[in-house]
Amino acid sequence: MPTITHLDYVGVPAEDTARAAAFYADVLNLRRDDHSDAEFWIGDQCISIWEPAKFGMPFAPQKNAHLALHVDDVAATRKELEAKGVEFAGDILDSGVCHMAFFTDTEGNDLMLHARYAPAA
View 1 (cartoon, helix red, strand yellow):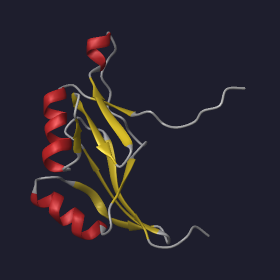
View 2 (view 1 turned 60 degrees about the vertical axis):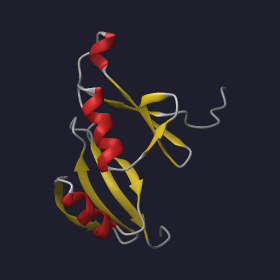
View 3 (view 1 turned 135 degrees about the horizontal axis):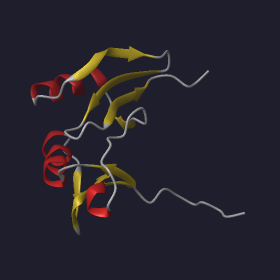
């Protein structure tokens, strides 16, 4: 049986790589990769923006597989992103162990701000 040792990157589909890259760089303030205009780093995890159409595949945004973007304060970060024009779906959700706020990128991919405040039961 193969042994999977880590996650190399998360592919994020886009219709327009430049538009998506601007969102991840300028709105979310993610660190750009030194060798690619379409890759961004969150800690040691890479997000790679790609255009399915360039590979002969239809574009479809990622839905219901939210990237959980860790922040220290969901409410404060949400307010900052709303000031940059990001629209959120509903109120901040409190699951009993974490706060979550849901939104999409410019391509319609589902994202979430996430902050755990208690251990899972």
